[in-house]
Length: 279
Ligand SMILES: C[S@@+](CC[C@H](N)C(=O)[O-])C[C@H]1O[C@@H](n2cnc3c(N)ncnc32)[C@H](O)[C@@H]1O
Image: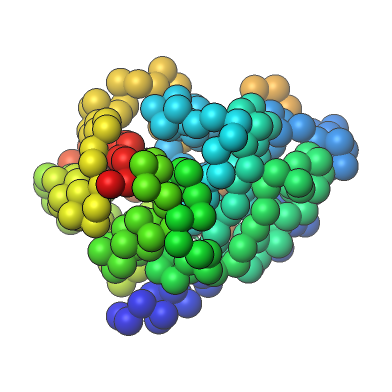
């Protein structure tokens, strides 16, 4: 598939399903007024990656993000990680995402949490990032690269929009050593839109795009950083624990999540977390 055909399919995968309505219903059912919802209350349902909010905080710690950093979240979804970074650290974050539905919902949720001045959304592709050279101090990506076939182009764009000395942080699902992947999974219904590479290839691609490696962990080295489940349940108290399945992944949500566990157990997929410095 050419890049734009892949992107159309990926954007469709992450669109529709009356997302805003479902989020509002879930919040109201939990007794939360959307207009007064906090970043912490939203966090269990808007950090759309393994280990949820704990994954975001771990990557932020490794990356040493500071309040003065200009951050780009490449494939940032509905902006949960961006809001968390802006709220906890105070940095400005630009979310770049393919899905117009996700960007629109992200803007609404950002307005609810009064972070509009810190978190902005741009709908577009990370393969043609609509920013001048050296615009950011940090480029960050979580669980988007599985949908990106043209990784050399992706890492070249990350390099271009980072200032020299800037950091590139990634937290992704990557190929494991064993059997082929069982579908559907959260990021794809089939192999046509799933592009996993082994960790060694990702490291080599990023390095050859012009980065020096600062930290790298994969497989058990990632899992051991977290004490909580891979797919966190809902909010500690009130939100429906199935929300993340139902709202974001449609009717196949539970099956997608079961397949993540099966694929991990079979060694078909694993996790990688790394921070690099732009040379
Ligand atoms: C599983 S979600 C993760 C969202 C977010 N990073 C998070 O962790 O909450 C993957 C996101 O990557 C986005 N994505 C995939 N390919 C992309 C591309 N080529 N350009 C921009 N966004 C992309 C999708 O639209 C989707 O919102």
